[in-house]
Amino acid sequence: MIATRTEKYIGHLFLAALMLFTVLPFVSIFFTALHPSGSLPSGLEWPDEPQWGNFVEAFRVAEMGELVVSSSLIVIGVVPVSLAFSTMAGFAIGLLRIPGARWLLLLFIFGLTLPFEGIVIPLYYLAREIGILNTRLAIVLPLIGLFMPFGVFWMRAHFANMPNEITESARVDGASTWDLFRRIHLPLARGPIASLAILLSIWTWNQFLLALVLVEDPTQRTMAGALGAFQGHYATDIPLLCAGTIVILLPTFVIFVVLQRQLVTALLQGSVKG
Image (cartoon, rainbow, N blue to C red; front, side, top):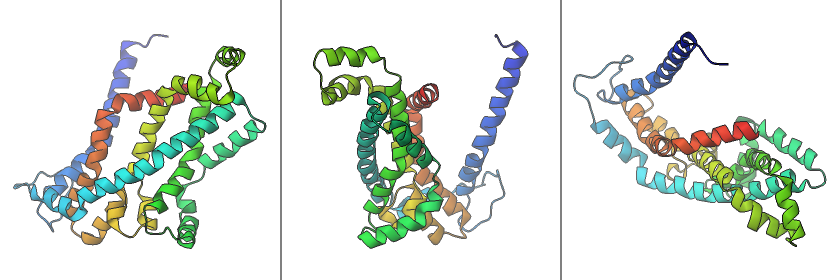
């Protein structure tokens, strides 16, 4: 069914309104960050003398260099392990259809419903008991477990849609299960694995709650987790708080701009195969 010109016009207007509604808060934060320290700006108001030094001060207080290193270490600790476990589990459930695969899949789907807010307190006591509280491991290990349900569900969708003829031909040629996974299906799954890696990297980089609760040292948190330190420094200084927010969110924005095509591909692929 072909959309009429009126329908396209209404659709474009709706998308423009939605984009404006999404962008305005960020524009407001940016304008506020340019006001003098200690002032109380009102909404979308461009200052008479923009204080670009607020961003320099925010960069200094945020210890941006150490935060980038810390966030990178956390991403490196979470994403490869999550990808490996998710890919192997998705292969076993989706293609090998091991005994109890249906119940395992339901268990992982149930894991998708668990909110971070509901388990952060038990995670705090568990991390304290095993001696990793206030370390990056307190963020890395829970994130690996919390990302597993989505990762397995994502990779299972790919392997479940692979033609059976590929597996049968490999079996006839004498391929073992390990050969089937490593030499045949793993190369064919590069697209879904890359898409999943992008999503997990962004989610890990932007993790706020676990970093804030499980790690006291701001320099060992993620970039988003450092917002808690800013609230402590500038709880009443709105312009500097907004400047710190922009400085912390800037790397995520750059990543999104650079990888936007891959992100769109990842989301569309997940919607089709899911």
